[in-house]
Image 1 (tube, one colour):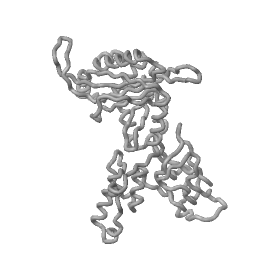
Image 2 (cartoon, one colour):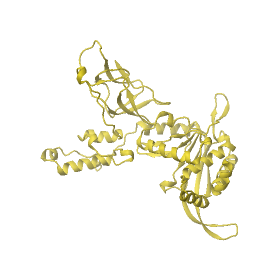
Image 3 (cartoon, rainbow, N blue to C red):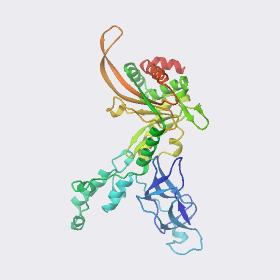
Image 4 (cartoon, one colour):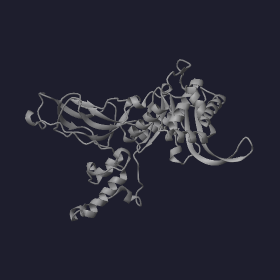
Amino acid sequence: MEVKLHDIGEGMTEANINHFLVKVGDIVKADQPLVEVQTDKMTAEIPAPFSGVIKEFTVNEGETIPVGSTVLLMEKENGNQTGGRRNGPETTQIVKTKRILASPYTRKIARENGVNIEEVRGSGAGGRIVDEDVLLYMKGESATASGQAEERQPVSPLASVETKAKTIPFRGRRKQIASKMSQSLRTIPHCTHFEEIDVTNLLVWKDTMKAGGGSVSMGAYFIKALSVCLKEFPIFNARLNEEEECVELQSQHNIGIAVDTDEGLIVPVIRHVEGKTMKDIHVEMKELTVKALEGSLSMKEIKGGTFTVSNVGPLNGSIGATPIINEPEVALVAFHKTKKRPMVNEHDEIVVRSMMNISMSFDHRVADGGTAVKFTNRLRDLIEEPQSMLLELM
């Protein structure tokens, strides 16, 4: 019987075959993971629909296939078909394969150069194996192995750069991101508003909290401040329903946090921010970021967002941007790096302050520039005077 790639998430049209977790002839139990696949948003495992024997793989590792494609063939346990390796009941074992975190392209490099990727130690987030890990492994092998290994002399894809341009696969998550961003720009008339915010007092407040054992990240504070603003300006926590000719104001603040991973951008969602403390947000944000970097997010953790935040400040390389809205949401705020600058205070004195820029992109079909200015002014006030937000939350 056929085991097919089914739709494991909204908008999914294809997936890449990362790694088979079983071999032909293995006896497996119902719900045992058979193959690891990579979509644009997550890494997932396809389980066995019933107990039986693996008969044949119909696709290859590294191959990208559409939803509905047959991945492998199985024979049901106690079925009438013959063939395949069977073990007696007394020796039946379920083979558990070590899960390897690596991109399809990294796996391809390993496969083409005869490297068992399970033997490579990953240096990426969560132990993810990157291209350089495979290349270093190959160098180490050639330096210590015998003449037979030297005769093989695998050629690194990077070594051919002088004669042939290096290529990067345009599929999986990268292709889906491209499709979604293009759709967003084609559909939404983007407008981006910029503001600068003095975060000096917030940094002092953060240090005070840390000294008292109640440390929370700046990102958690920003997200909670945005939730306060969204209560006052619900037009930015909405969806445009053109078919019904209405704007649907969302009651929940499900805020997505953009995470930059080796496989591309992914946006896990912190749900019900309006009802959570900054400490709750801080903890959940850290957990979701780790999962995003490891590629272990569930579909529930990446869907249902109503507003998105991009905190590029920690990357220390951005003073402004025109972020693309995460459709069907209507707005996105990006927080950029903080830098000490000379500023003129109300007494015309030059003082050194810690300043941060923000960018707010919004759907001009749904909201106007004046409303966006009021929104960012309110956000600025909450960030510049942390005590004012504490009063809001009491």
